Image: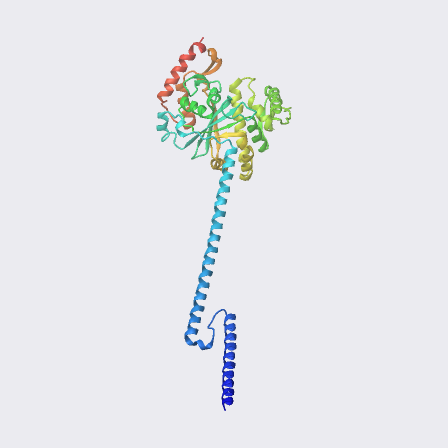
Length: 418
């Protein structure tokens, strides 16, 4: 009986043990199933609270995953925006670098505004009779080596006055040997101003003696003229017999210095000259008319260049400008140069002349200064100049010009009247 009870007890215990084992197996399987689903309750016996805990946990995981995804997407968008910003900045930097390099290639020279001398009277006229005009100094220096700043004399000095409303342009050559205040209260041939103080002093010399308000300039040497004319395909010039001999002589000299080939001009008459030939033509002075005729030739070539440039396309002009920028020195910015080139068809040279005016000039050896061109009356010459350039009637020169005029007369009258 006791044995049966123990047997029943073992059987019961064995059954209970089997049931517990079965439950453990089911729970383990359930747990594995829940793990495979990513989360969940560990057994069905945990009840509703376990299911709620699982659902909350699952919901939290989903929320966390969404937040993480949003964070990743936000970071990704941030990186894209940063990348775009970097590209934009890089583009601006490249454009800026391109502009700087182009401007530097021109030999860009900044002259501080406060260093430019403009007589007080002229500042007042600038708002009235000179309003709408832009005056630019053009310097041609005696250089084949590329020396375009101070240290070399300006063989050619011109003033280009442009009426910005009509496009009409007038050119005036200031003869290089003209006896003037050099801009530093010393008196001598005016072409020495460029040699002593570069474009800045040369501009001040023009402003002080002629009552002008020039702030911009362009300087070119023999190479610059030669390359410009060649780029345009040559210019049309009328060559006479007296000029034929000299044009080839100057060509040979410059060809050696610039390492350019040259082609002799063999005929007189109206013909197309290449760059070296045209530059040589500009230099001729040993014919009738001397330096006065040479200045006239320089204006002829400049006007012929303008004619050829007006027939070129904007793309061609831009390419030509890029090619010759290294051969010039200027105060103009790149955008100003491009603007001038784009409007070139609107410009027309309506008249040209020389200063001092023919009826008011004399020549003579002025002591140790050598042979000079003398404005017999600087004051009257300035009155003529303002009528010629701006159409001003009865212009009244500044007190400064009157003072310079008296000094020039005092220094020169004993030489030109003897």
